[in-house]
Length: 351
Image (cartoon, rainbow, N blue to C red; front, side):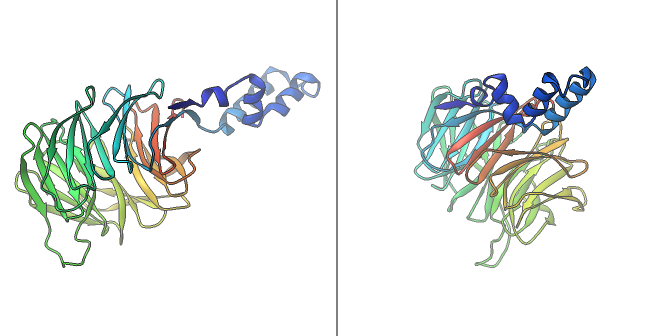
């Protein structure tokens, strides 16, 4: 089920003007007080109204029966995939918000999805599943983790995938066969967090991977050997990390309401992003790497300028934690998933 919020927010001109907060001034300008204002002043009024107008919510997607934990656009951005505590994935038509297909097969909540030609899902049932989303069929199940699987990512060439689990390991998988190719692990005390990988990503060359651990460390790994190449400490805890498209920097959501931008080659902290009023649980880079999204326990999504750390815009509308955010391929739309059981599509064009 979908609600197209344009029909609510952009109904007739009067409703739009009242919601935008500039209708009285405009009416005054047209009715008398504005008789001497002129077109230039009226243009300035319109310009100020555009600045004050909140980011446009295109539509809300409804269908899940529990928390939405993860969202991803299809490579062409015409479809999107979400994973939920209700143990299902839903494939959505982005243009209409209609549920195209419900994918059932996991026996516990779904924590992460990756969408390429096919889709991969990671679940608390300790497995990953590869899906033919058009047919709604499971192509294969990847078993080997001994704990819930928190994160999954395709390699750039689509032939392999990486997963991170509560069992304190990362695993490299062959997509065509489901074979486990390699296990990445660290030596740690039995009761420590020991790099429980909440986020994983491949660097653009496909030869190196990044993982973000709950203990507050980013780790770079050699795909060929499974050897740990570098550790970057970003805080005492970490909830999510995103790698820039060029692989040069990473944005981490650490404990509290702060984001940190780190240089991958040196581990140097470049800047912090502050503005949320609650813990940040999801981050994503735009396709050109110039902006980033974050989703928080404060029920908002924020758009940031990466070069400066400046907050560009806040998106409000969810009624619970924002658990996942994603950019469309052209960077002109954003998708957010929430514990309020919905997804929301936002218009970024012109920002």
